Length: 384
Image (cartoon, rainbow, N blue to C red):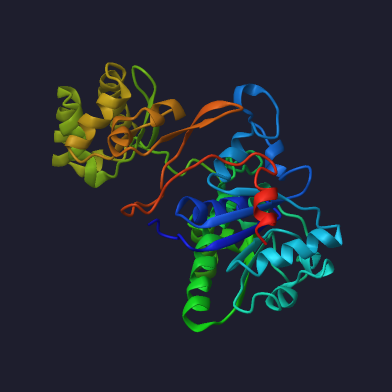
């Protein structure tokens, strides 16, 4: 029996955060019914597409975030479809929705309306800025979260404009938090018979995220200091990305770890120089120290693969790691040994590699195809 088997979840509104939150439920055994408009969830139209060919069942974003779900098409602008949704909610314990505040209530599907058909319901609402407040009706995006939340101010070169890191880290983190909060509220509903309306603000999730925001905000709250852009890892010691024979490694070092670097590289000239530094520490903060490190380290790096550099450094407890491509991660021997990646065959696009479980529990997790648009409409509605 999988971890969340026996729980029925209704997903409304789609998008990345809501889809990812309910994916966590589906992969761990819950029955997740994804309600889609006739044109399908917006993520079906998000690039990249498998084989670089557009199609509503070919988006990599959609396929990743919707494994193991059922797809039911309902047009919630139609009263008959809204009634069908109410009947479906009456059979579920959880509804996760991503509409703007007030949209569900305008359809007669607000929290109080849904409690009338399911008194112990957990309704999780995911929006950019929450259900109330001056920004409640504002749109949001990954770029807005980074800009308004603070971390962009400290990212990039000091003489250039602030930068945002690539990808959708914040909206996925929002989905993670939504899944955790929803499951906690569901436990309360199951044990105490108490319903809950969980209000998830993507922006507020960002402010409490370990992705630099918390560090920046706490630093200002306690010290009154704002983040600045610049090369924070620059200086005499090697910190950052360095080239190898076949790519790059990420190096981290402090003065206390210098013996680990020397034991790994084993360059006679560099060892001799740091023997002098040990006898006279005043020699350390000089450009000659950096030159001695570069002269010994670069030949060592460039004569080895990034995997060899990483493994030799780690033998001496020097934190160095290879910088890998996605293909190298998928074929990495460690993840292969743990069976982390899974291949799912789709009739329309062929085999697709999916990431495995974020945590392992015996027989607790499985992965299945993401559904074609409306594939389960007849079966699900016919069972009501």
